[in-house]
Length: 105
Image (cartoon, rainbow, N blue to C red):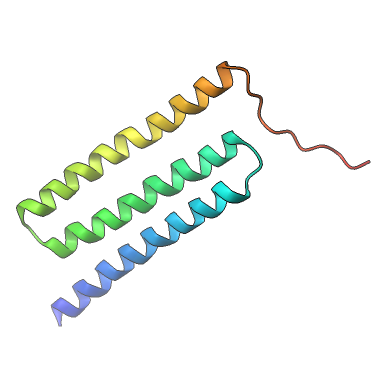
């Protein structure tokens, strides 16, 4: 019984992570400029990877592998938002302007 509940929790984490990866990919394809695309992929990939790694750590149990997975998770949670911000700041400083919606008057 406990194993079945644990498997359902792991599947929930994995499906939620896959959902956020898919929505980040849709945002990458649909948004109009680099800044909004970076926002979608930065948020979606961080959350997707975090949920998938949490599911894998739960599935592995209390083992050295789960500790390694949690270290990778912490690394991703610390570096992904910072790198996304650094890329968008460098692009903005280089002169690329954000997209502005034009009125249809």
